[in-house]
Image 1 (spheres, rainbow, N blue to C red):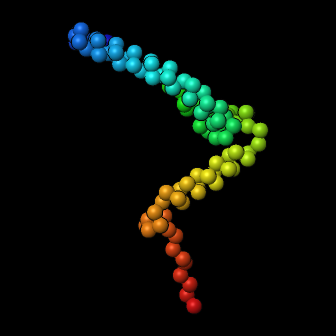
Image 2 (image 1 turned 60 degrees about the vertical axis):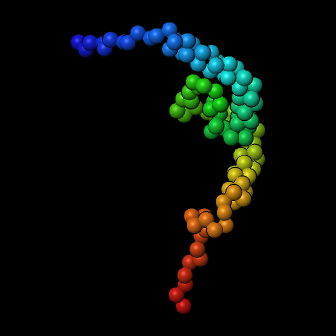
Length: 107
């Protein structure tokens, strides 16, 4: 049977740091909850693959249906176009990886 390694005692200073960190994390989670619920609602309608990704410790089961709140695909199609437009605006014109070259023709 494997033995469990002894754990070093935690100093009072470290305990205080840990407690403050946990308290700060909890406060930040609370502050973010309102925005997270807005982002979750938007993702349910516009980008279903992003559902359940705005809160800590949320798990998506494999094969879980995520598009049950969508009325139609207009929002998803518009999002793909918007992403393409933003990408073209943010990528420099001289960027080597972003330009396609014309195929050469042998005449």
